[in-house]
Length: 129
Length: 381
Image 1: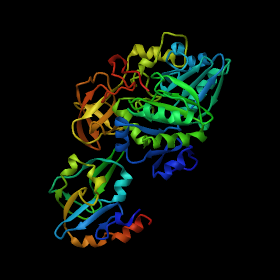
Image 2: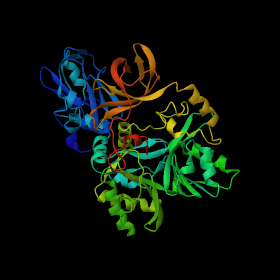
Image 3: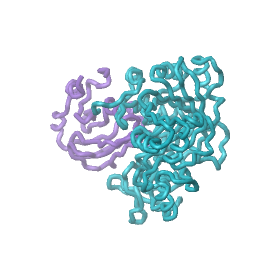
Image 4: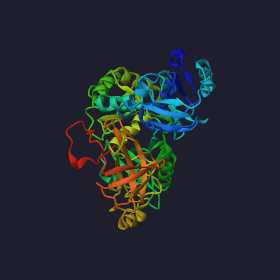
C-alpha cells in the first residue's frame, strides 16, 4: 500500500479509523485501507448530533454490498456534526475517505484521550507494513 | 483462508489483476476486481466476464442417459432436444431441494449437468446411484474444466469476435438460440458455448479445457469485458429475482416454497422426491419467496427476522443494495398470507425497518436480447 494512503498529519485507531484534531472538535472517518477492504460502501448509519459516545464503543455502522461493520468512537465525547452528504452519497467513503467521506465530528470530553491514538507510523505498523 | 482450497485455472491472472479472493464452497474464487458496483454496471450496460470454474460439470453418457436425468431431477427432460438446456432441481426423497441446476442435452447419449459448487458431490451421488442399474456412465469433470460466463448487452458481439479469432468461425455465439448450446474446438480443445447465464442479461457460458481458458479470458478482456467477481454475480441475480441455493433454496424447503415449483413436473413416472412433492403440492406451501423493498436506505440482510404487526412471518434469505435501483432490495421466505403490497417489519440488529412486500423481479431484463415477452419471464438461467 502506498504511503500517501496514510496521511502523516492524522491520528489512527487499530480499528482503521482516522482522527483529525481540529482544535475544539475532532473529525473522524475510516482509512483508505478500511474502505478498500469493505468494498463499495452503500450505507452509512451515523447518530444524530448531540449523541454522547464512549471511547471504544460502537456509534454507527458502515455497510458494503456484502457486509456491515461497526464504527467505534476513538474517544469519549459528544457528536457535534454528522456528514449529511453520506446519507445520499455513501460512495464518497470510497472516493475520498480522508476528505468528503468524513463521518462525524466529536467534541472530546477529555482531550488527553487523543494521546493514546496511533500516529501514521504506528498505524502503518498495525497494517504490517 | 482455509488450507486445501481448490484454485481455478485462472487464479494467477486474478491475483495479477489485484482481485480480492475469497473462500466459496471449497474454492478460492475472485469475489471482486474493480468493485462490485462498477462490475455490476458493466454487466448491465456493456459486458463483463466471470470465472465460474467452481461450478460442477457432470457428464452423463450412454443409451440410458435420458433415463438417468429423468429419474434424478424434477423437470421433464423428454422434450429437451439436442443442443438445448433445461433448468431443473435435484430433490431429496422428502422433497427438500438438494440443488438447482441446468442440464444440457448435447445429444441423446450425452448430457451435462452443471450443479452449484457446494452441491456437486451430492448431485454426482444421485446421478451415480441412478446410473448403477442402467446403461449409462456418470463422470465428474468439475476439476478438468474451466467455466467462463460472458454477460451483458454487448456480450454476444464480443464473443463472436473472440471466437472468430480463436476458431475462424463467425457469429458462433449470436447464432446459438437462447438457452441452447453448441460444441466447437477452441485452440484445439473441445468446448461448449451455451446461451445461458445468471444475470438477466444476454450472454453465454463457456465450458473450456483448463489450459485454453486463460487465452479465452484474455481475449474477452481485451475486447472490453470487465473482469467480474462473485460479489457482482450475487447482486445481479438478486435484482432479477433468481434464487441461489443455500439462500432461497435449501434442503429444508420444497420447490414450491422456494419459488421454483414450475420446474417440477409431477405428471410423469417416478423420480427422486416425487411422492413427497405430490404431497407437498397438495398441502400447499408453508412459506413462499417474496421480494422486499425496505422503505428506508438501510440494507436488510440474510437471516433477519420479518414480522407483520408483531407476528413472526418469515426470514430474509438474501439482501443487498441494488446498484441499478440505488436502494435496498431483499428476498425473503414469508408466510403465504403475506401478499404483495403488504407492509412488514424487518429486525435490523434490534431496529425495526418497514419494507413493502413485492413480487420479484425488482428489475425486468431480457436475456434474449430482444423485446421482452411477459409470459416467458420465468425462463431463467
